[in-house]
Length: 373
Image (cartoon, rainbow, N blue to C red; front, side, top):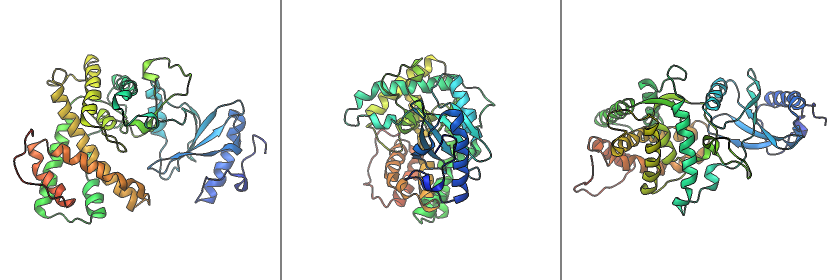
């Protein structure tokens, strides 16, 4: 097979499955045509990863050494324009993101530079949290570089409509579809009041560029010997196509309340304090007493995390029930734990916590609750 020849179905690498023969053929033709321009070896294409969307990523070797990433994003389900836009914004902010080398917008195929195959999640030491502090310093350095580049009117607004639309995933998919839990009028009113409190608090603070899924599995560790040009490039950044302009608290909440791992609160506090110290010096937290009182900022992070956790519970249920991806529901206990911990800290969320316990069939001992605000 020559470098410019499209791989035939019979020569497509094993491990890559196509449910649409026409798309498989279109991919082979596109890859063959792209190969000669970028020095690719089509016969080396293999699956790199797949995410919760309809996108898939392949890795393909280059004749000169190294590799590239191919994005397969069916246009009927995925719009690649935001990916291209945000990649450019992040690069301008000094972050290390994939370069877009080729893009067939009508067919949804894209060729990207390869940031490697080791995520931050792969190298974290869960038994010795303190050993991970340098990695989280790199992560928050990249995050604040992204945030300081923010300006309004460039990315979609993370406004009340979007926050509420995301929250609605929880009753629609987690409660209604997954748990088969029918809310009474009283319970529906409790949920509505909690949602209003969540939205109001989260819209109150400063706005910045928000990655929206800033967590270890989307941060890439460079290969050995790589020397970043700046501190903000110590980690590569992926999966940024859903970026918006919204609460400054969102990405640090996402980083430290991860969808796939849980840290003890003392470690969460330590990293969040270090982020807070850097962010306030950069003028990102000039709101009320956030820049002077870490506690005030941390409470805002908790309320933002609560919105995210409820949204993800709905998304994970939808991925299972609608999209046939059951593995995500295995992590729902983690999010119920996050939700209950946060709700237990705030008196106004007491009725909401009771509702969650009813949904989860948890029997909580009655008595005085201390430390709730």
